[in-house]
Amino acid sequence: MAIKYKVVKMNSPLKKEGSKEQYYPRVANRQKKTLRDIAESISQTSTFSTIDVVGVLEAFTTKLPYFLKDNCSVELGDLGTFSLHISGEGVDSPEQINASKIKSVKMAFRPSTRIKKDLNKVDFRKIKK
Image 1 (spheres, rainbow, N blue to C red):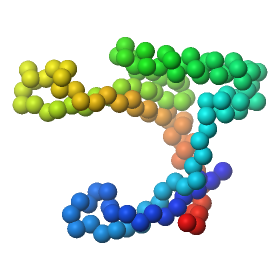
Image 2: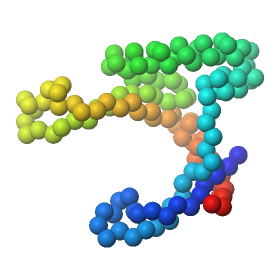
Image 3: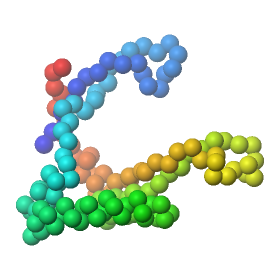
Image 4: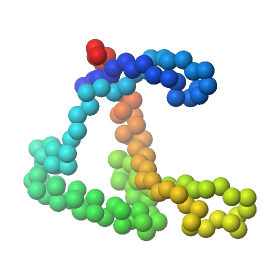
C-alpha cells in the first residue's frame, strides 16, 4: 500500500512578503470511505454483521458530541483521543475574559502512539499530473 502524491506549485505558506513559488508534495487521488464501507470491512474480519457495526458506529457519532460538550476528552484505546479546543479574543486583563470572548470551538483528534507508528511506516508513490 502506497500513498499517492502529486507535485503542486504554490507560494510558501510561511513566507508572506517577497515569497517565491515553490513545489510541494500533496496527497493525490484520495478516495472517501463511508461509514457503511468501514462497517462492511469490519464485518468481513469479525463475527459482527455489517448492521451491528453500523449501529455501534452510529451510536458513537451520536454520543461523541454529548461527551465533548460535557467537558470530557474521549479516549478510544489504540485509536486515539478526541477533545475540544477553544480560541478567542485577547484582552488586557483576566477579569475581561468571559464567554463572549470565545470565538470558535474545534474538535481535535490526537492519534495514539500505535497509530502514529503505523503511519510512519508508509510508502509513497509519485503520480504524473
